[in-house]
Figure 1 (cartoon, rainbow, N blue to C red):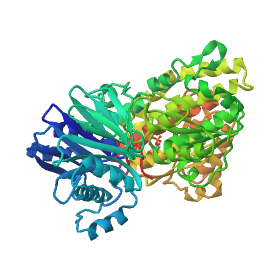
Figure 2 (cartoon, rainbow, N blue to C red; figure 1 turned 135 degrees about the horizontal axis):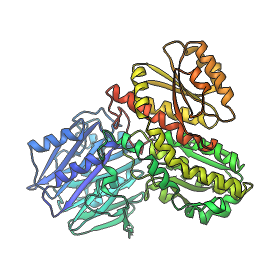
Figure 3 (cartoon, protein in one colour; figure 1 turned 180 degrees about the vertical axis):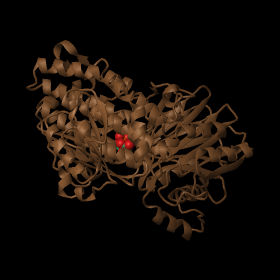
Figure 4 (cartoon, protein in one colour; figure 1 turned 60 degrees about the vertical axis):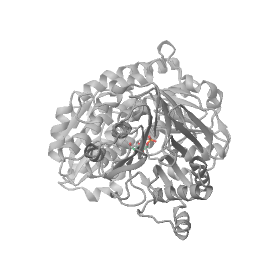
Length: 612
Ligand code: F6R
């Protein structure tokens, strides 16, 4: 949510480097963008509402020669997405420029103080207040930008990731974080600061991650890190594993489509090296230090948001079925505030693609405070949740750039199926059953390929229904969370209202919505609830609803009932969601494209929700 990039170093096109970095972060926010650079001792700020391309145009008409710049792509929190509210913000004398991710919760109090002291504010943003606040402390101290920044941050409540530069001390970028990710890339004679590694890897793979309440002072020749309460620290250098190719579109029209098509390989990457076929079990190295805790856990809690929450719901069914351990699934935003009952031997898993979602992070901090063990199922290595959990399993899906999560979901399901098998084999699940599951998992990548090969059929269905104002998605058992996920995909990228329900719940209310204009997507695979789902389809047909069914390949009965059938191969019931979600991802994608929606940057949304 919002992207920050900064450059200091030997090259003199710092502003261009920053704008290029912002393009890689645009999926984090695209309401406005801007860049500030110091050229010939003066501060130059170019910014405007709109996409990074618009700022790039500004830069083309006003080129900047500079070895020091910061930039921002914004997802608006305080103030409308206007030119004035765009970042960077500067102080009254245009000598300090600052970019900020997060929310300064007490900005009204600080603002009142500043106005009393005679400072003026032009925008509606909390960020400008913070910039002017730092300026006011700088004036009071009679110099010392680092100390002024540090003191300001000790008074700020809320979340922030910031980067600032100043003509007063034009030899440094100051960055700091609390609750919003920031890293420093260490190049050859140059440093690139960013809120996300995607902006850095073009230049270097060596990074340090700032922890909460830490700041870094980055100069042309090196960097120093310390805590906001002024203790010097030594930050470890990490190596970023993924390459540039993985954050580019690679010939696809959209990142979302590329990521949908990556799923055969990302699913394989999630189980690679983890299956022990002959023993019918899995090896999860990241959990070995908590194996005993997991063996004795009386209860498992999953906490997550959005798509990751839907994966958690599937995980609940998997673990309860295979390992017979009670599982609870909690929205992180609810869990963190409702004083949940936790016991010391409870194990809580945070599921998060980004590893930075503010609510999920707060939920595990709350759980840890209450003595529970917090573990992670995370995609981004080095992310805050990955660092703050005691142990965990990476899903290894690679960078996910499309705002609508696709490959991360199926990789989360893969890891959850491994976890269920791991826990099951610690309990009653037999070796024979384990072998059967391992074999089924190994077949999934090819099965995914066969579903993706039906893309054209799905596009034709999308064409027929693209103008429907509403959709209903229905499924039972393992396919109920898939119905939720299908509806979420459609609404977030095509702006069509869609609801997901457990199919049998339909008669308790939603049935009233059915008429000949209502498309109803049934996930009707041949599991133990199949007959019941067929009855649910009959009920919808009797009200003239239009039925789109996701069914198994050898299912002849469904073709008589449904208006359209998209088939998926057979697998074990608990692995079905991995396959049944794919047509729904493609359906949402094609409908959005046909409606001319910006698939990778849906309105009002951004990847990685680092604010509450
Ligand atoms: C939907 C989507 C979001 C995320 C949610 C959690 O397509 O991407 O609902 O799933 O914001 O994000 P992570 O998994 O990064 O914690």
